Image (cartoon, rainbow, N blue to C red; front, side):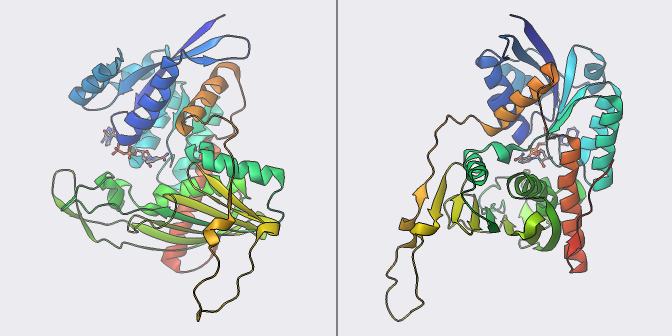
Length: 383
Ligand SMILES: NC(=O)c1ccc[n+]([C@@H]2O[C@H](COP(=O)([O-])OP(=O)(O)OC[C@H]3O[C@@H](n4cnc5c(N)ncnc54)[C@H](O)[C@@H]3O)[C@@H](O)[C@H]2O)c1
């Protein structure tokens, strides 16, 4: 049995996603379980080096989790051949520049979405990585959520018949920061800092729709800044220059219509923070983050419109839960394990920087649609 120790530069690791999802729930969880086991019995053991600007924060994070390696010097980390992977979860507007340096240093790349602030930037990264021959991947965590894995199971089984439409409701109330602190970073609400619902969430919707139902072919989108002022982490009031809600319709391959509402200014009256309803000729499903319920055509009730009497049907009772039938691990960790196997033994990993660029494309064209008040077709991407 061989042990493959892999140095991973983790840049932006003091942030919300970097600390919780990528360091604690993925890399450290993989270390705690003894590594990633390969079919031949070999083990991959990730060895992170925490990178950022703030020495105090890095040291505190490293000490809290018993991570011996941390640094404020990205160049030095890149120069060390022991570090084979560069991971980036910095704020979106800083990502492309750092990834370019890492590609030039010959590192394999794994990063958060969106990969860059615009399509040109995202495509450039995909091209540079291909030319340099480095392996590359982009976080597409929603694909590994139990609720979406169950949906995929339904699609693959042919449960839906012909899929007609998809309705996604995403969001919750993000506090303005005055009488209760906001639960998301303030840069999310400033365009000049890379914020905005469309750039943030459309990359997710692109890979969810493409992978589960069919490639997105066209977009129509309207967005709004519903809350014009918020209070930041320092207690200072700022102007919200980015949209905090987007209402979009997507046309998918095969004529499927997907409607997706995304809002940080909505109060949740549904079963989860993200719900996906799929209607097909043979059956329908509603998935949340973990659960998924179905209604087959033979179980479909026959409502008759009559507001003069109390509603005789309890619609919620007509659905059946899809069973787990497997153990589900953290979505980010599952994808990290696949990427580590991709790096060490060339296992398949289709979610690369070109796939990531498709997300940036949908965001960019969603913004065009909103600005120009029209449907916009998505051309096939080439690098
Ligand atoms: N996959 C997902 O579900 C998901 C969810 C939320 C955010 N994200 C993405 O993750 C990224 C980070 O989001 P977050 O919510 O963790 O943000 P955050 O503000 O909590 O963290 C950002 C990180 O970038 C660092 N950073 C910011 N400015 C910097 C600078 N000038 N120099 C060096 N480092 C700097 C911060 O120190 C911090 O470590 C974003 O690109 C976002 O789109 C992904």
